[in-house]
Length: 248
Ligand SMILES: Nc1ncnc2c1ncn2[C@@H]1O[C@H](COP(=O)(O)OP(=O)(O)OP(=O)(O)O)[C@@H](O)[C@H]1O
Ligand SMILES: [Mg+2]
Image (cartoon, rainbow, N blue to C red; front, side, top):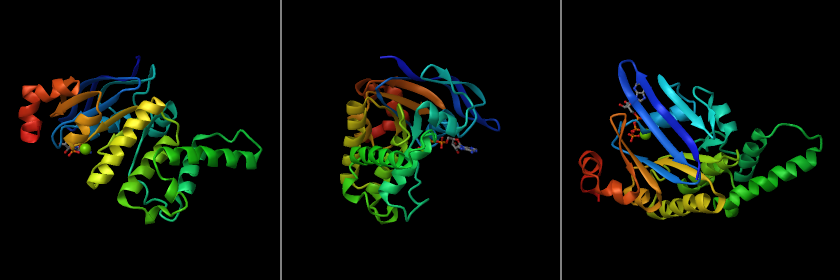
């Protein structure tokens, strides 16, 4: 397994405060990696730097062998790193199929004059993604009418429509019912196992984290304080002290 994503000496400072403090992260191709840690540990800031939404103060980000440090989110997406955002409210009156089709088309260049062929193939590509996230039954429904769980699945679909190698999720099960959480766990597992997708996510639900992570990175005050397979992290005394406490 090769390295897909790598940060080296990554720092993000806000004034004198280091929200991300010298983080070296190595994510292998095909793995499911979670990042955990207390509120304010720097998880979202780390993601924002990786996806180009924030410029790092120091350090580098490499993806699929290329230096993507400081590149725009759009460029980072084109390299194959996609992030699911809470954006289903942007076009609430579009159907699921229309939204995903737009995302598919947005990634393609207009190289074909065969407009009909072009749109049909975009439709097929969109339907494949919709099937992968389990939204076939609601494909013709407007986004605004979907349940919370289905809206989050649509956000994942919109990210998948860009054809990523790595999918980045910030608290994918936040606000979900137990049933929706279970479905998300299965979805992430399927995407990684069946499609060879690499997944990087942060999450506060430790049942989810320990159920699907190949490896876990633990952050505290901007730094990585531990990393390993679930059993190693569960038994790490510092991790238990600063975060897990009596959760496990
Ligand atoms: N734009 C900003 N300006 C100043 N400080 C910021 C900014 N963004 C984040 N911070 C600070 O950086 C620290 C890390 O925040 P971050 O959102 O990355 O934490 P997190 O690990 O994602 O927490 P949570 O689990 O609550 O989502 C916090 O102390 C936060 O207040
Ligand atoms: Mg966060």
